[in-house]
Length: 190
Ligand code: SF4
Image (cartoon, rainbow, N blue to C red; front, side):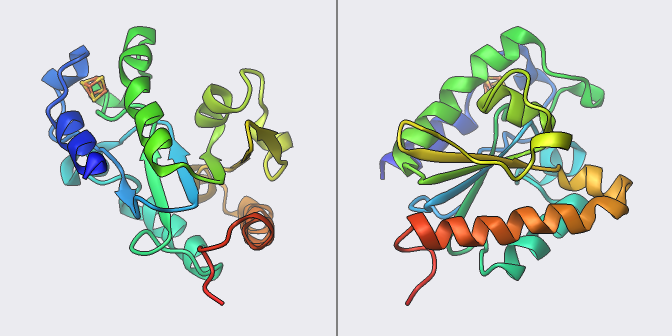
């Protein structure tokens, strides 16, 4: 119930100027009891229109990777963005917009209590793992903070622009499957 209350409050949020130009708040999508959480930077046009994270072509690619390792938003992962409303013309969020929105992600994290966090793309990795994180060089590497495992992989939109990088991205998902087997107890039944 607490999660639904958080969602309702977030959907009505007016804490920063992006509330004036959004179509929908993109709260996140998936299982509130997921052990694995994926985090992206913020919504784009399709996400804003549908109120869901990672839809459109890059979302379909993400869903295919998830399916390949036995994951899906309908059962065992939660997908969220750091900033919940789309900046106009897809500009970068302003510092005050990041700051205003981050508490929503912190609350999601507190309630979901994931064992694994996967950052999607450079911006999310630099905000969540380390400010100088190089997603090109360091994707697929793991760090443990406060008992939670963190990693990053290439953003699905970047893979659509550079399909030659898909095999190395897929290796990250294969490694994720291994990490899930190692540290999660409910994600893969049996
Ligand atoms: S971007 Fe975040 S803080 Fe700003 S209005 Fe949307 S939900 Fe609220």
